[in-house]
Image 1 (cartoon, rainbow, N blue to C red):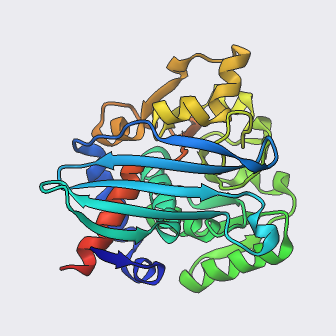
Image 2 (image 1 turned 180 degrees about the horizontal axis):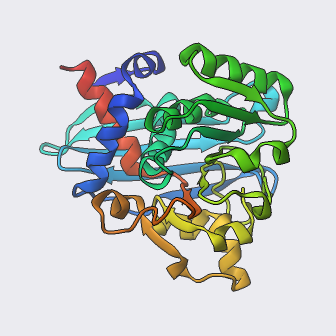
Length: 315
């Protein structure tokens, strides 16, 4: 069995190859039972420590990702997420690889969002507003910029130091992009063609009234039923696609809170990513429509991304 570390993952992956690989997987036959997320003692009620197990399989490979999510870790200089992905050969059932899931999570999360964006965002989307300055943030920006003609990126976060770090990482990878730090959201949100949220915020990051027509909203930071990165009004006005109904309806406050309020029903979710990729769910209907993609993370994306790395390293 091959052990694949974070450095090999980083050297192997590119959004130009990973996003099409994920698109093919979401269009093809796969198995993906509900992921299981277990709250652990530690942290707060809203931002508690978590252990999760995510299984999936395709015609080529079986896999399971296990990860921990400790929201307070950055305060101690540690990463929020630690993960591993174990792969088995689909034909024989033999274990073939253990892949670093922490670095893989950044790549696959951003790639999945970009895959959705490649269908839901306007084709001429050129301005990205990025909420969040954690480890995931530069991946999100670069992934969206790989599928849409992004020219301007605005970064909003609580820490000037972290915002500057994310700015530098994006510009190092894509010096052609105009990347700025934004302190006042209201100054730039009406310019945003894509709003990508990758934060630990338990409350909405922006007000729906400030959204411009035609905006695409990407929400990846929250997987707690009592928390949300956008308000009910934003959900109500949006054409909503999710990565997995089963998981989102079990974990995502962005959808669960409006459901509990009676503001929407489950039919407000217009499709899953797999249905969007296969054409069974409709994407953007017009340039003025507001679209929204909510992701809590799927095992299929983890397994396909890990297998992509494994294949690249093994010819």
